[in-house]
Image 1 (cartoon, rainbow, N blue to C red):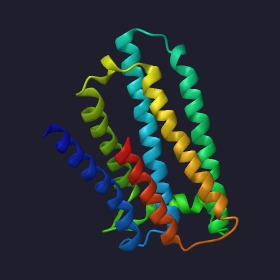
Image 2 (image 1 turned 135 degrees about the vertical axis):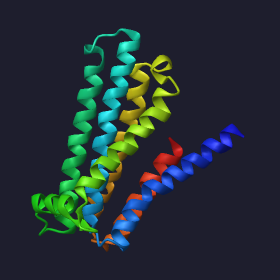
Image 3 (image 1 turned 90 degrees about the vertical axis):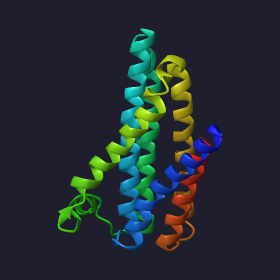
Image 4 (image 1 turned 120 degrees about the vertical axis):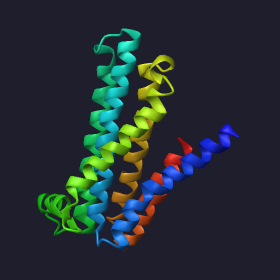
Length: 197
């Protein structure tokens, strides 16, 4: 029963994570790059909470910060490489995209008279914080996980992200698909990863 409840919660979580990009694309007129920015924002929030988890483990175990620096450096390298691949992807699919203007448009896009940056960014971090509390703090994972265990799983997910971005970016050099195809691939990949982790 407990396992079934956890599976149901995981499915609900995956569905709710996919809901904002779907609503954004079909109802709020978000373009593909808007949705990519949303996922990058989510990635940034996840990375921040990884550092909080690392700190909690370090404080509990009394280990030095130097022990976690190699993992943090590798994680940052994978994230920067992923961001570069996203940039290449956007240049291939929509060459005229002005990244800074799109980021500003993403922040200042108004729905019901309020710029979404003021709602969406706190919402992403609030959801990340709730996950951190429920999946890490309440389960006292800082007492059972080592920094190595935590970061090995995280780095695997970043390598999967990098692999996915490499494949998609590579495909754009041969064929440019409609935006909804890339959105479907993105949702399928992120949902599958969340269900399997």
